Structures are given as C-alpha cells and as structure tokens.
Length: 119
Length: 110
Image 1 (cartoon, helix red, strand yellow):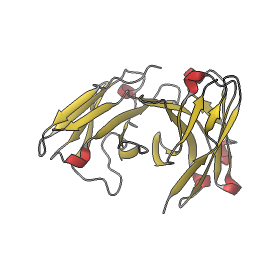
Image 2: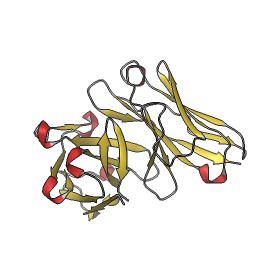
Image 3: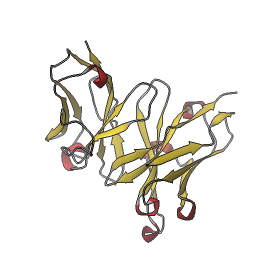
Image 4: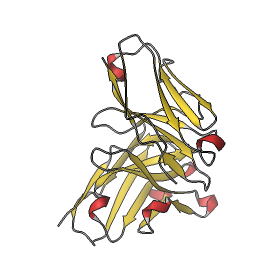
C-alpha cells in the first residue's frame, strides 16, 4: 500500500521559516520526482516545484510565482522529501501536499499538512 | 504562467453526462500531451483520475474520460453518480518544464 505522510505544519509568525517533511512508502521512492503542491483555504491547487532524481543531480525547479523563498530537497535513503520556506507571509497559509511526480502527473499524494501564518 | 481556465461550477442529474473544460494557451495545454485531471472530495487530498489527456489509472471507472482540442482539454463524466460530487482540477505541463493547474470546478449532482 502506498503511503505519503507529511509533517511539520502548524502556526508560525510572519517572517519565520519552516521545514515540512514527508515520508513515503509502497513505491520506489528514488525513481520518482517529488514535488509539493499547496492549497490555500477555499482556493485551488498551486504547484510549488519539484526535485528530480539522483541521476539528475537532484535538480530542482520552482513555479515563478513562488518568489525564491522555497527550497525542495530529498533524502532517498529515508524515502523522504522536504520543503523549506523562508520569510513566511500570511498568504502562505495553506495545506501543503507532498506528491510523487511522473511525467507531469501526480500519482501519489499525502494527506496534507496545514501551515497557518499569523501574528 | 497563469492558471488554466475552468468553469467555477458544473452540475447534472444522476445518470446524465457532464463535461468540464480546461482552457490554456499554446504555451501549455495546446503544446502539451501531459494534461491530467484530479478529483478532490471534501476534506481529502486530490486523486488522479486522468493522465496524458485520455488515460485512466487503474481503478478509475470508465465513466471518466478525457480529451483535448487545441488549447482546451475536457473531462467528461458519464452516468453521473452522487459520489462524483467533488471539485475537479486540470493540470498541464508548461513551456518551461513547469506545471500549471486549473482554478477548479465544483461538480454538483442534483
């Protein structure tokens, strides 16, 4: 059974940093790009970016709208992916989903972790 | 790159067919064979139901079908069932290897 489990969300203040984690099982983690998608309350899905494979030197790509504050990484030995967000803004409040990516489609999703940015 | 355009809402009666459109540009949908559709039930994570424009993952009923013409992709749900009531999102590859989502369509089964 495939499982993707995110953690690390919570209430943070504007300007702070945060690292989200996800751990996956049930599929060959090292063979999949891993990405993050977020969903603000009552809003649609927004692609954040991806980290490619070891053979791609773990190259990353981010949506232009993310503004350079997001960093995605992975640790294949732990079947884990990470999202680091700097200088959090109120508009970053959202559920953050960790996903596997395969040819621009997201096969496996976590349940999401809620990040609330508020003073 | 702007979000793909979807109608905010769609509806149909049980047993009917409904089609949801997803309009982009020649920089994404029009030049990409990697259009996907996701179903999101209330309070749940999205679920892949269509990929590469027309393909269905294992376990997805054949009531769900996808197509594309020019810059517009479409999802058709045939034989509507109450359990199909959900939000539906399209996505496409973009011109710089990125991925762009549609704004989402809320499907109501009357």
